[in-house]
Each structure stands twice: as C-alpha cells, then as structure tokens.
Amino acid sequence: MNKKLDISTIAKIGILSTIATVLMLFEIPLWFAPPFYEIDLSEVVVLIGGFALGPVAAIFIELIKIFLNFLLNGTVTAGIGEAANFLIGLSFVLPAVYIYRHKKSMKTAIIGMSVGTVSMAVIGGLVNLYLILPMFANIYGMPIGALVEMGSKLNGSITDIYTFVLLATTPFNILRGILSSVITLLLYKKLSSILHK
Image (tube, rainbow, N blue to C red; front, side, top):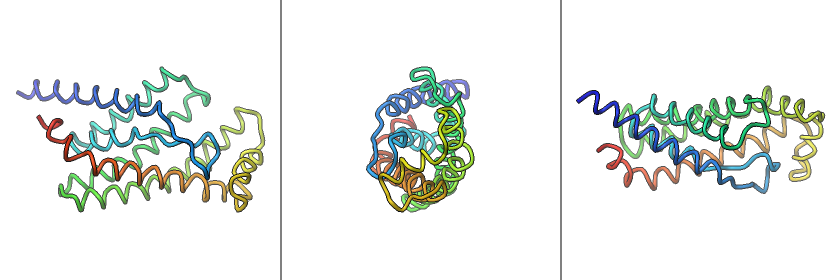
C-alpha cells in the first residue's frame, strides 16, 4: 500500500511539474516593469500540489519545473537566475503550504498565501537587489544605471537600484503572489479531489 502511494505521489508530482513547465512558457509583460519582468502562472500549480501533497511535493514540483524550463529555454544567467527563481518561488509557496496544512480551511489558505506573498516580495526584492540585477548587468556588460534607466522610462520615481527594487521588483512579486493566490482559490477545491484519489 505504501509503495502504491509513493508511486502515485511521484506520478502526481511529475504531471503537476509538466503542467507548471507549460504554464511557465506563457509569460505576461507588465506595464510598470522592464520587459525582463514577466508574470507566469506556474506557481498556481506548485501551490495546488503543495496544498494537496505537502511541502516536499511542492519543493519537487518547483525544482522540476525550473529544471525542465532550463532544458527547454536554456539560460542567459549561467543558471543563477534559475536558482534565484527557485528560491523566490519557494519563499511564496512554502509559507502558504505550511500554514494551510496546520489547519485546512479557506481562512488558513488565504492567510498562508498572504504570508507567502509578503515573503516573496521581501525575499524577491533582496535576491534581485544583491544577486540578480548586479549579475544581469555584469553578464550583459552594462552599468546598473542602464537597468535603472529602463525602469525610469516606465516610472519617473525610479532613480536608483533601491527605488528600482521598491517600485518595479516588489510590485511585480506582489502582483504575482496575488494572481497566483486568487487562481489557486478558484481551482483548488475542484482539483483537490482528483489529487487525493
């Protein structure tokens, strides 16, 4: 029975990872952020998987979708962007999953996803400030000021790397968290019965 359950869970992780990878290919550009910030809805699948199968499953779904996307699209950041994406994704999903699994209800799901959204905004901001943006500028041989200028064209209040993170990166991650949370709330009840079979 345990063996069957393990195989079933692995199969579900594989299917959810594949769906998340496909969703990751459809990116939505945003009006307030430079073109390299695009939203995809793959975290919805990771959240649904985490709620139904637990935090370990969520980690594997996140890891596999990043790896498959890496194989399909390659990388322009020597894998560092993908590693950062993995960390930022988990900073959203894991708090939500742990809070929800403590007491499964609509209220704890909403609290968990709210905490996850705040966590992603904070960790995403720090990772972008100290890792992604400096590395991005270095790889493309441009000063940080050039990235700031890209943000300034969209929002005149962006004047340096700190306001860039505050007014472009942070709203991007908050919007990403809210969208993923709302869609998860709409879909989870319908899909959870299938995942629990």
